[in-house]
Length: 396
Image (cartoon, rainbow, N blue to C red):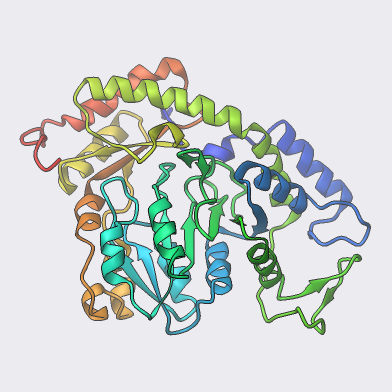
């Protein structure tokens, strides 16, 4: 079956320069980033490209989840601390917190999926060590007010931009608003090396600390050899990116601007088709800055969202519910005693209301302009599914 919108993103670009750059790595037989010959590593090349894009210093790492964990460590989070985590997110945002022995406490979101500042004010107390704000499916949340509020109180904002490479809000790139920004390059991301991640920050001292912690706390000399006797060395962990991953990402990064322009054009055309036919979409704080990796459709309820997914699948369309509940509702968190009622805090009502209803349809680089009408028809058919059409306008 030929799928109209194959969901591969960065993994769709594994030819041309990707093969050339990976071949160079293999021919050099240098898979580790730290070299003794003075030649710049592919990791360092990729970090420069990220720095140019975000306006921040950058550190390449082994995964987005590892990057979250490193960011939390550098932010001073340790066992027993509380970290406020955007309630509507992938479980990794919260599990990075639990991996350090800290407690992920949910903070509610707005209808644009950014952190609700009113709820943030209510939950903030002396036990909160950091806050994680999240961008969802290429739609960058507006975290500027959150950053200002937390900055005045000396509480670090970690920006989980793992799903938003290339997005921006009011001209600021995803990852550059918080004290530390985290990116992911897993299979289904805009840049994809199978796994891989990065941390970006406007604060050089945090960039240095992240790089050092992720390199087992070592100080490296000009030969690339580690030193743990240096007074600047620390106890860290191994979260380094390989040279093969970095080479793949360098090649994809060079094409990112063109890919984003293509996706935004396709997204705009598709959005026009389906909204004209009555499909309700969820919009971000700055739609023009979204990476346009997905269109988010607001179903009436969970059953309607499920029927949409089934109908689209029958019409060869990739799409479905993103996360049908906030992270704390999954049994793994409840069994660990981390449900809101067990923590003694209120739940996140807006996140609980939106989660079962949000259906994401990817704007894949494999989608062609000639397929936009076909994709729009399939989405509209799914949205006005005969089994659920009654009452579709309710609860918007």
